[in-house]
Length: 162
Image (cartoon, rainbow, N blue to C red; front, top):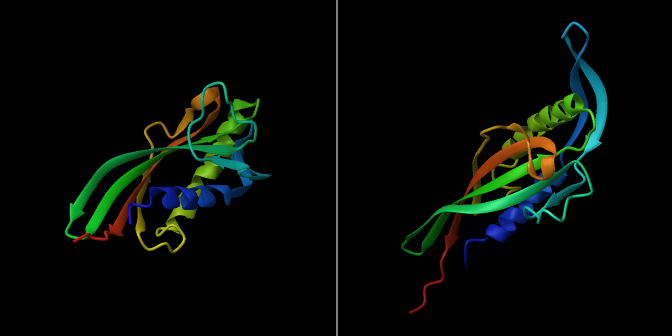
């Protein structure tokens, strides 16, 4: 059985698609943070970064890109460390509000993967961590959003031939 990165990718997109927010934090005229009701759910989680000519049309959405950082073999076991480079794209003409929306979703992303450390109970995978270099950023296609990296570890028992 090969390392099932495709199954992990489907499960990660399922977690992404289940995310929703109920409020954002905005700042009043004196820069005091105020919670404002704002209900919004993820519309789509794309399995890959698309060509520049294929700009997403449903927002907010995720785009994903995979990287295998290490695959090792021990006896009848294959072990792989993978990184999902995910970007959450927000479309809002008000860039301050777009940043507030992205910030609210960041908390939900952290909670969503913390609650699904085994990607929904799937045995071979373990979420190792979530990181970002410029977490709140201008992402692909020029949209504001979140630029994150999800590190996962997969184990697979290999079928050995004689």
